[in-house]
Each structure stands twice: as C-alpha cells, then as structure tokens.
Image (cartoon, rainbow, N blue to C red; front, side, top):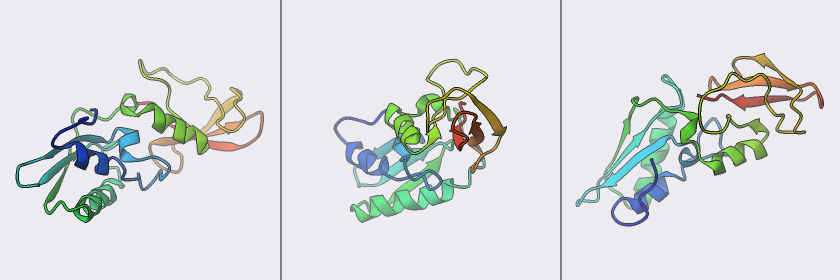
Amino acid sequence: MSAPATGRGSRPWALAATVEDPELPVVTIGDLGILRDVTEDDQGRVHVQITPTYSGCPAMESIREDLIEVLSRSGYRRVCVELVLAPAWTTDWMTDAGRRKLAEHGIAPPAPRGPVLVPVSVRCPLCGSLETRESSRFGSTACKSLWVCLSCGEPFDHFKTL
C-alpha cells in the first residue's frame, strides 16, 4: 500500500514510515512494506496496520511500541496498532530504496518483483560475484539465509524472496 500524498492520514503515515525495523535498522518499516495503512479520524486518533514479514516474527511487538512512541511524541493522543496477517507480506512490497539500503549494508536484497524463482546463485553484495553458495537456509533472522561468496570468501545475508 502506498502512502496518502495529502489529506488526513498523510502526516501520521509519514511519521510511521520512519520507524526502523529492529532486526534490520538500516531499513524502515516503510522501506520493507510492513506498513500497510494509516488512518486518522476526526478526533485525532490514529489507526495503523502492519503486516509481519512472516507469521510469528518477534520484531512485531517492538515495532508496535516504536509506532506508538513516534506518533504519541508527535501529538497523537490515541494510537492503535493492528497486526494484519492477510494478505501475507511479500518482498514485492519492499521499496526500491529498501532494496538499495540492504545492498549498501551488505545484505543481498530479494529478487526483483515478479514470480518467485528458485535462486541458483545470489549476487554477492560485497564484490558483485555470482559465484556464491547457500550456507544455511536461515541467517541471523528467519527472513534471511546465510550465503558465502566463493570469489571474495566473505559470508553474507540474503533477504529471502517471498
């Protein structure tokens, strides 16, 4: 879902979109596409909908607390954060800026939007080589896998394409 450009909801959306992912602080929940909707009613109450990258993601409670803090600090007295599981999150919701930030931080971003392909190789975010192999299906978090570059010898995380 994209942010409302103007009108009610655009300011709280812009504030909510700045909340960092606690497991990947180089990207925001706006970059990841976790932020699904933000509405503001006539009383100044804000309702935020977020979708986890996978069900059971332990970061959701921290993100909920950060959203309430950011919006409350900006003058919104009542903030409700709702966890939405359907439709399931997909890496197609990740912004181009989010993909770029992951790569700049040494995490191989998910494949471009479209059909999910079985990766034979992932481009090393450090040297650009395609001579890589998956070392572990799970990396530092469940949404990433661990890969090793056969050219430069460095391990790196790959954000799984979903």
